[in-house]
Amino acid sequence: MSIEEQELIKKKNYFEAIRYMDNAKETLQKAGKEDNHYNDRKYVRTACGIAYNGVIIALDTYLLLKGVRKEKGRKSIEYYQEHIGKIDKKLLKYVNDAYEILHLSGYYDGILNATVVKEGFNEAYEIINQIKPN
Image (cartoon, rainbow, N blue to C red; front, side):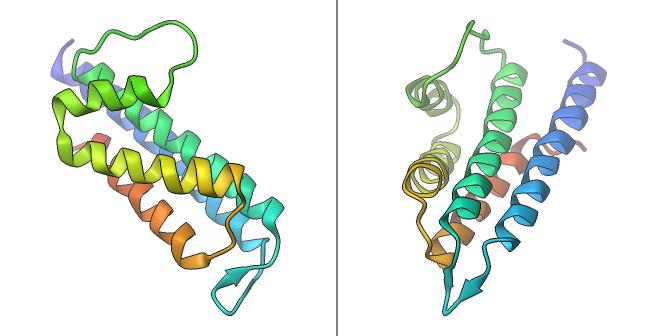
C-alpha cells in the first residue's frame, strides 16, 4: 500500500471516528449533570457505546496500516489486545482503559460518574489520534 493510499485511509477513517466522538459528546449532553454525576443513565450508555465504536474504527484502521490481516466477522477485545500488544504496548494500555471505561462501565453498566466517563473519552481520543493524518 502506497503512502498516498495510507494517508487517504487515515483521513477517511480519522474523520469518521471523530464524527462518532462528536455524536457521543452531543448525546452525553442530553444526560444532564449535577454534582459531577450524570442524571440519565440511558444517554450515558448510548454515548459510551457511540464513543467505543469510534475507537473500534480507529483500531481497525491502525491494524490495517500496520499490515495486520483483517479477520472476517466481529472481533473480540482479545483480538485487539493480542495484535496491538505486539505492536505498541503504550497503545494497548489506552485500549484496555477505553474498553473497561467506555464499553464495560459506560455502555453495559451505565456508570454516572462524569470524571470516569470523561477519562474514557480522553482514552478514546488518544487511540483515535494514532491514525490522525499528516
